[in-house]
Image 1 (tube, rainbow, N blue to C red):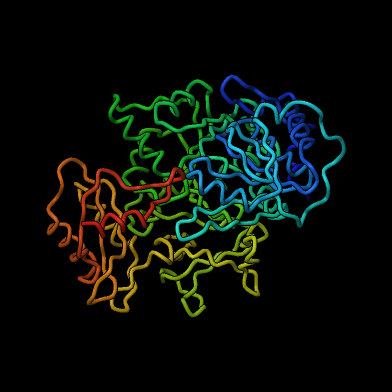
Image 2 (image 1 turned 90 degrees about the horizontal axis):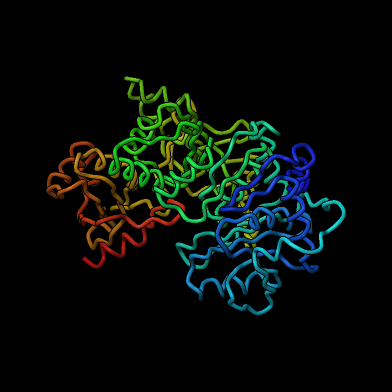
Length: 488
């Protein structure tokens, strides 16, 4: 199947229903289908369709337009430095680039967002490209050159058909989309909203007051945020009267990074009528593979059982269409509560990079490079990335376990634990802390860790920062924290 089928079904079944709200622009599904054909008509044979801009109707039309034309859609981060963008453009030639920038790139044709959706329309049906590439997404490139993750039509269709019911949304439902177009959550939001028939309300640039105002103005019923966004919303509300008036909001999903427990607890208190869901997924898995649903949130918050209560810090259970396994470094399956490397398997899992091929093993398992454990009921708890593990004198230390302890201090608002070089141990623990008000005594923090864990986990260096560095999609930039610690 071709992902264009998602839009084709929506346009045929509910063409008059509003599909996208972007500023003053409002498109029905019939309008979007027509714009998609106009985008597809602009593509020459062999060209990819690149996108370098904020969220816009042209982004959705580009995803489906590339599929209709039988080529791949390649969004590029507009937040990168110009030399980084130029390097990525060289890797995707020949291409047609949708952008409002006037910058020229060799072997790249350029068209504005508005012009991409006017003119001649491509006639005919979408080609049968089930096994072909639909989306290419560049990784963040935190360690070296960004990799190009490949998502095929079969992967994306497996995710949508396995997790979304066609026309399941009511006509009054609207989803607020804040995640940028070059993130897998931005891609999956377009595909899943279209298949469900839920109106997409696009917010190009996030700010707490802008997010709240648009949610109120457009009577938003569903939204997805990354943890840092929710934290900023909660802080904004606390500084401006302590009430969050979103009576139409029904469901709020979050993911893309670790959610501090105090933040989600405050958010649930501010929006008691809202269903909260933690969605865990990766680019290589076509988005979500695990969910901590609304009932699990409520059960964890009201429970006095510490094993149930801790599930609020988990990413939930695997989707029915996804298999999950924790393995030791030797490849053996871990027992419940035993920390190891997270592996997943399923039709939506691509695990493929352009130029590097498939990373799936012989049995179809993909190593996510996340570290974590599964409890006796199948709830997955993440302890960070395998590359983030601190190896102190041959002992593996998870940053997450130390961070959780430090966050328990009443003066600690946010924390990042990273490895720092040590002549004696090879690596040891360093911590960067954001405080609530005045900074606590460093010795007090060390004793807290010593008392809850063990001496090897005690930070040998602590610095205080005004805020931690996060990407716009909510990922903690640990390499930047390491650089700060190295300069002290």
